[in-house]
Length: 162
Image (cartoon, rainbow, N blue to C red; front, side):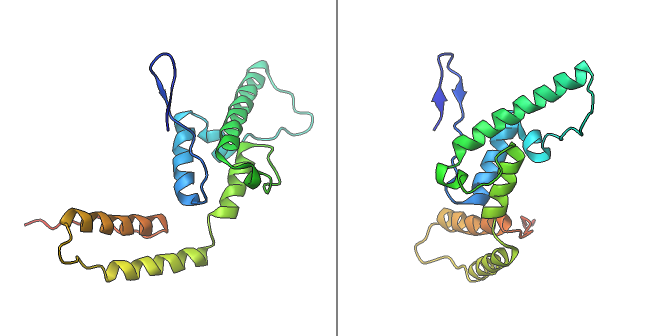
């Protein structure tokens, strides 16, 4: 749901984690990219070595990155339920939170392979039912293909030319 402010600008809502990690992470990554915070989540903010002296420009740049990280953390805190956040041990940076969520919820390779095999089987046995609309059949087919892609399948769209 979007929130409208007084200048008729629609602010997109923060994607809430609902247990479906692959879908949420895609939405959240896009949301953070739109806010220009994704780089600090993806790459993190480098730790300074002991005794390193920064120039004023470097200090200003570092403070800017730290502020972006703080804002990204704020969005992640709002997106993730308290009970889940309590299970994340290190919440120092947005990268730590993101990596913890990924490790905990993305699923193992074996589980993904099993899900992909089940989807392949469903796809291979897919048949249009009597009385079913072509648009419904196509929508169902695309839903299965999209789930297969989410689980790592590299199916390409193919069109037959006359």
